[in-house]
Length: 138
Image (cartoon, rainbow, N blue to C red; front, top):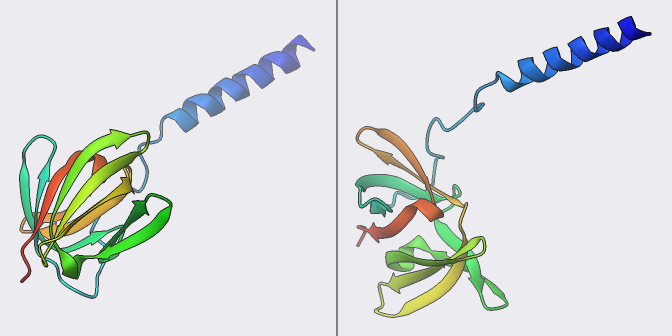
């Protein structure tokens, strides 16, 4: 009986040790392909700027969030600049300056991801890591 318990304990410890040795897994390799090319300058929380193109949010060419009780989408074609504001729970308050001169403020998931291509390769940042996004397209 003791021997069976000892064997079981050894197997369990070995299993835990071996499964804990794995890395982070697949990880990020390249930006998703998008139909339209949007050139941007992304400023992260540390002030670092990345000039990129083929920009997307979650692989899409619009932002999706909430405005009060409503779910909204804001197409990149309409955006001049995005500023990421305060965090409330798992969402950030985002201010979108639109090309027509108006502004809209909405909430977006903090862990949602933005992707793009830069001269050095692909990049990915979560909304939590971004301070602002300047859209360069006319």
